Length: 293
Image 1 (tube, one colour):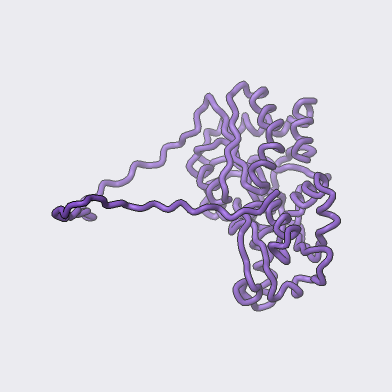
Image 2 (cartoon, rainbow, N blue to C red; image 1 turned 135 degrees about the vertical axis):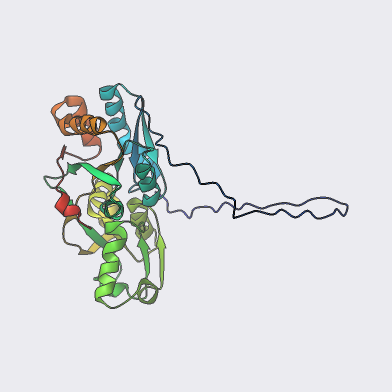
């Protein structure tokens, strides 16, 4: 998996003509603006749209979630679409506007929206018998970096500005040191997925990174080089696992219907196989206290 720098889209206004022409002035009146129309939810009852935050790069997400999406389509009888965006904030925005029905988001992204009461916990995954996870601080195994303090003056990869494990936790560590990222690290950047953060360290683009322990374990199982080349030099306390959420504006009956499907998946062979593709044992009722802002 390759680390990439997103291209920037440049929009230019072009003025052409060989002869001199009289300039025209366009006046935009700001005192006669009509209000924008209210957001209208785009999700339709005859489709199912599932948004997935970019904890994995796009290719990894499609490969991992395809059996799950296929199961939902078969179970619901509705055309089911996987929706991806680059950042956690973009996924949050789709959920808040009810453009999608359900979303797999990170803990930090839910806490951000829960302050505005926009989203509602649906279920949480149980992985390895637990509904919690950690932030891992990683570094090259061959380097002399053995602790977070050893990353002083080094290059560090964050995941996403809303990521609990990939951004908020390392910021917490810096606060305890009385430092800011700009003064502690020589250089920082966002990768926008945990597997890209891991790849950035493996490829020498970063001297350290903060990643989701669940993603680290998932990637390590599929790529033996990760365990050989990456050392875990620190870890956080346990946090509530990244939840599955729905827009609060979604009709109550639709929420209950989706919850029933998720909670019973592990009881069916096809559902169990779909869960296995994501490394999930089953879905459970959430504990809201674990997600308090």
